[in-house]
Length: 69
Image (tube, rainbow, N blue to C red; front, side, top):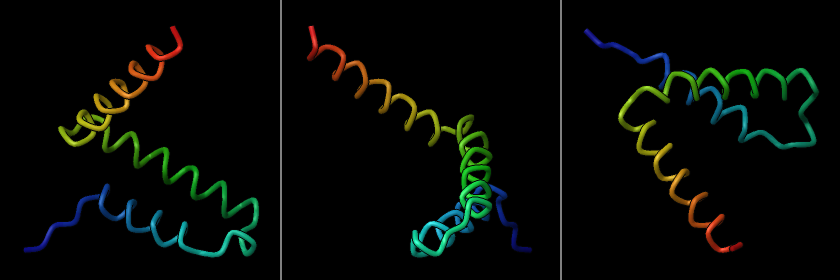
């Protein structure tokens, strides 16, 4: 039996929607992509992969904020 993750499906949909030419997009299309990306972020966040991304972004932001002082 093959199982598909909702996160994987949303990621694939977002990838396909973002590949389209920007001039062909309408406001409704942009809103759908933003909603999909938000849900995708919520689904990825509690996983170990999501935590690794969060830690990496946090470390990068800390490094950038340290450069200003």
